[in-house]
Length: 101
Image (cartoon, rainbow, N blue to C red; front, side, top):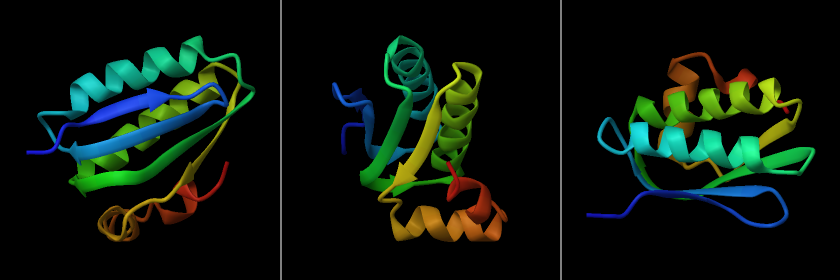
């Protein structure tokens, strides 16, 4: 089983990795929220290229991170979304929302 994580580098890039599901989602949510609040960067990027598997929980995390960044007055963009997440976003009609900063 893959470890899940959300880590931030000094440039304001959050790296989301592993399996995103109902088991891993709550912990990743808390960690990501804390990292976004603590960051001094004016613009953040969430890199999803390390995600190995995602349910709709992955999209929920991204939406939460977007809301957290907005509340903190920071821009947030999403990069490297795996095909599985893109398909869920299309079905959920969230593609446009997730593709804009």
